[in-house]
Image 1 (cartoon, rainbow, N blue to C red):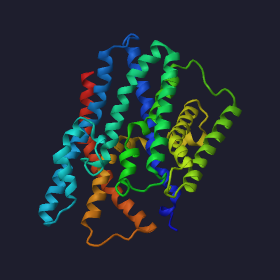
Image 2 (cartoon, rainbow, N blue to C red):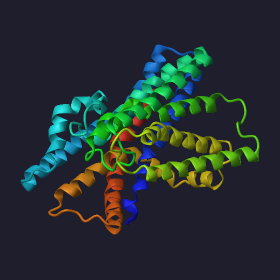
Image 3 (cartoon, helix red, strand yellow):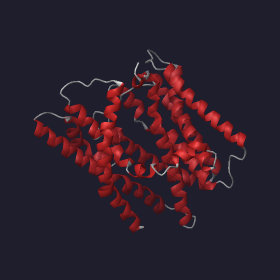
Length: 361
């Protein structure tokens, strides 16, 4: 069995949850810092500016890529006299406005313009909740705790119920092959909000704390052991529950309800531990300067790389042979043009708007 065919590796889809957790953390810290600079006053105008800044950060490159992708695929269709991914062009012609309004995650995978951009819509919708939760926190902390607990229970229970009703697996490989998984679970707000909420809570704590949480080495050791054990168990249970359930399955439902939030809790622990000086070699590794230039083009890479993958697969004259070596070779072959084009788009499209934002502020 090749390494890319190991069923448990489907757990790697949880990489999005660490992004959600970090987004929630950064959104809370950013808004609280903005409130402090505004003489500790929260207002509708401040919240609106907070959300508008997010739009200016995301939408310019997002909308540019829609135009670029439509141009590339339309031109290749005419040049090659073939129908190269007609759904790309047709879907964007019909539903481009959903990307502009950031509501394309409400469409099915087969209807979306640039299907991988569903995350941007969900991310912005989650951002809208940050000012609301911060207001509740500043008004009354006990109410904030109650609201946070209720929201967490909603996302856990709804994920479990949907999994049981539609008999979903926990290791599905493609949302195109299994549309029900994407339609009822993968793209839904109620199944994804848990990690973002954990990030918000962690961001509030890290911004407002008066002293370190981890005061003794045994606390750090216990936290790391618990974190690593939880991560291992997530992988083990994914392997054990790899088969598609033929009827309502309580184990599948429980796993689907909890695993995203548990993963986010582990990510939150790692962030807090590194921030308080207990990260060890992990903190050293993540603090290397090599990550800085890559992080600057990461958003463009996320938007660009599926275009190269689609171009490759659609221009093949024969079916691709999937093996470990071919996957490794294709990964490196896709990565190089992705990095080059992403750098160019970051410099020519994304960064000018970032600098414009800085000048206007």
